[in-house]
Image (cartoon, rainbow, N blue to C red; front, side, top):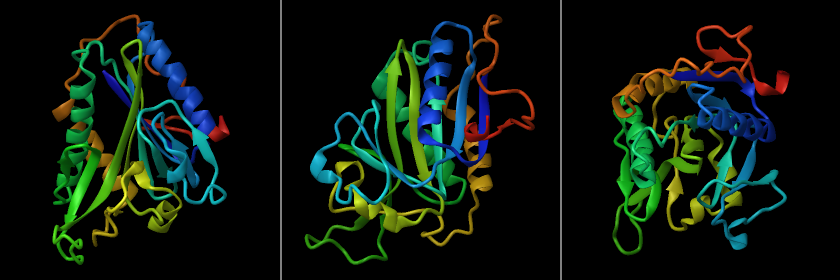
Length: 245
């Protein structure tokens, strides 16, 4: 089974990386269950393995963390749901491209719960929303804004890092980077689209749609079940923020 864990408050980025890497290693050893970890971070930028220095427009604005996930620069901060996915890609087909496609499909299904049409774009990983109410591009094409970013790393056929969905972040915080290295397009959020959606609403939608895209794996008795997250005072699948552990 796949455990869903939620940390309250803001989670320090370095601690999040340490915990998800340790959990991914445990999954690879057959000692831990798969896990999806829902967090929020304080304002920060992360640089993926393909990040270009010129895409960091304001290096002094927020802390910048070099990370070994795929992709380029992205922003994390309050009001954005970050979803770390520690999944057994080896048991799910050993197809990295298909796995990323499935993550996009999960986001699209989650957005559909709020009657938002998320779309893929060739050569632009992530999920996009068409904005016909905005002025067209100079070439006449319709504006599109990114609502979800995806960047994963796979080690020993187990994934970590994951995706982020903009619920109600301060969108001006994206101005310090070229998000995901893609200029000429904007970013949006569920609230920016005029929807009175809370973080809890998005979490519920993520849980409902996950099994539609990622079927349950057969249980492995030896797996202990996300023991890197203390079971007390965890309630209803909610883990305390790593900052306080």
